[in-house]
Length: 364
Ligand code: MRU
Image 1: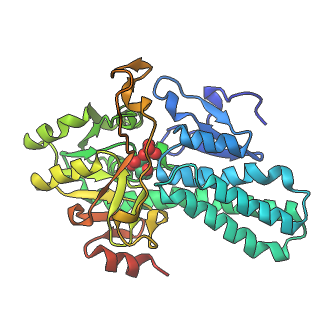
Image 2: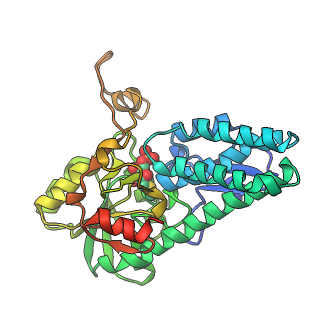
Image 3: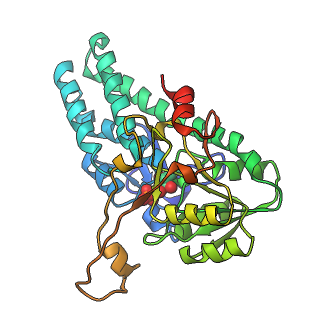
């Protein structure tokens, strides 16, 4: 076990050579602190489920798939001290901790999805488990499977999506749906990483993504680290770039896809999709199937997180707005499926009609 925060040399790297977003070793959960990127590459051991929840809320770990995986391991952190309880009591604790952790952030469905999967797994295994310690070990195996599957699902998004990136084209993305937001290849970035591995020349335009700058701090950093040609722009520059004919394709990630194909993603995505329609640029959304919510019929039912006013009234630590000004800060918006050319998934690119095609491809 590591004592204190891991030094940079102790942070494991993934197959892209980028630092792991999170990892589980010797019964401990470590999260890369994404709030410190790109200035510092540091990770934190999570001592309690309360700390995991706070890390999710503070965006130390963020991005829909990554918070799902963090949730699965975070649940283990929350119940590991209770392994001497009788199985029935241990299971009740698993259920209540999972319900509590699932409230950390509302929009990305992956968090609740992963926690529900952990609880259902624990319920199914409990009758055959010798004691709570044995059940805990089985649950740790399930959390690892969620993590490993995410790695593979995201890689397959790239395998299917890379064909969209034509040689010498310009690809615009918003926020960070990258390696940092998932277990490895990212979602929106996965076609980029695969195309880059296939030596296709292309350039990426990364929207800065106000207010918390995931595009500037994270996407431009990770693509640069991976040797991909990336250019950073502020959010209000995208229209100009498109008007100049420099953008051939838009790919973003998503936090939740409703049953009809409406997609919630980082605030500003809707504006990019409307611009793309105006300039007749195909707008694609990349996701693993863990991001599809068949229980929510359309985007109107997706809960939208609102964030603290200070994230808008300050830039870094510096105040940039008058004291006491009223602020509205939704963290996500919903892009109607009519604006989406296709959903790039691990099983292939889903085309309209999305409702029907998503059901055929993914609903059991
Ligand atoms: O608030 P964040 O940084 O968690 O928002 C993340 C996004 O909007 C991503 O695009 C989305 O979660 C997909 S991540 C593969």
